[in-house]
Length: 331
Length: 238
Image (cartoon, rainbow over all chains, first blue to last red; front, side, top):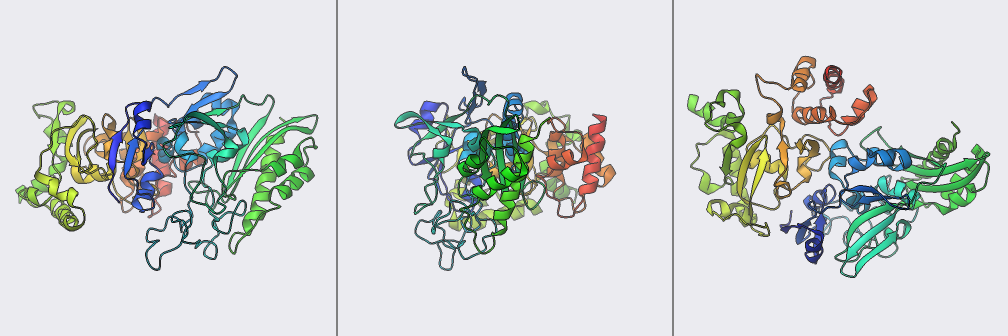
């Protein structure tokens, strides 16, 4: 591991003032891991664990404000989240292990980095190492013609096919969360759909944050009245594994027809994948297996499989159909 | 002979009941520890210090700050901004340990094992994937390999040595013995730290709930059935 300067920020002002050319460290579950692999080599680490951003509060408009430092386990077990946003609780509890969830934070999870093994390859960059445009811009993409069973089929480019690994983010995409950021240019909010970036020609740019920006809160809109929500995650083992395909659904059915619908997919996209195509195929339609199947077809219509991951297209469709069935089931 | 055994188990001393006649109560004890390096080799050689010494020697060439700072006593700093090493106090199993010249790269795991010599916590994968390094921080289980020691000043850290000791086993330790919840034993301390923590977590009553809650701890020998039996027994009696 490269050495670094360590600064413990006593408050938000100090944290922002120290942010220049630094990385913030909260739970550390992604960052320390990648520092050991020489993928992340920050010169300075600003420890933000003392910042008072660890509260979950009801907003006057009925929404929920989640501090960036709220740990994944605390968010998953929060009574209001379990009651009004079950999709989020289920997504969080399906991710990582209990130990990691006790460490990992809400803000950190938004910035979780891909599990692409070529991105994580420690010897990359040396002669004979693997190219990765996300880790080392311009070095190529070894996954494109390599082992790409875990890679993305949606939102890929000819520079990068790395899957976004987060479960929490998939639920937040379906819930239309809003991210609060504070940085050198002051405070601003970013709608969830605009936060993560498609790889395009710049896969190393993963989100809308600018240098020195710190995520402070994530707001969830007021729960949709009468809606049910659910998260389904399919993977190689029953627990402690990343998704091969997952689906988050928020749905309200009235008189057998779908009157509100939000759909997001995980494990298949280069970012948390909100599927407006699926939503369009579902909105106003009768909540039947035929409709669900059509929505799943629409969601994966633009899928671009590679050598080893073609199975994900069918898997994601079935995953979504199953989730829609659960979310629209009466009683 | 008695001497060398005494040296070998030096790191266990203050944690064993026989030493409860220490002039200070356990929670008032404070120990100052220096990094192990060439200069501190006057300590009688045990297998552990010998191996640790080799580690420090090997590092001399590549990472100077780790070893050259061994005999330099730096004053405590109000804010730990120094790159070369910081002095911090960690509270482990109710006891304060002042650590001089701590490398910022030192994980909580390595610091517990190599500096404080609490070697019950094991290093498995070193990447948060196996759970062998599980300890409690402020009562919650975490992977100590994915955290820097500098981040834990002021925290209450509990390791397997603080959960129970020979002659004074925690109910979970006793249940692991009773149900043979291990084979090689390498993952056991992490398994027990997770199992003790889950007693206070809001998890369901079924076997599947327990398995899910224990899924962050990998056992290569495959003692899972016996581990489950041990955890269920303690939960049913709690």
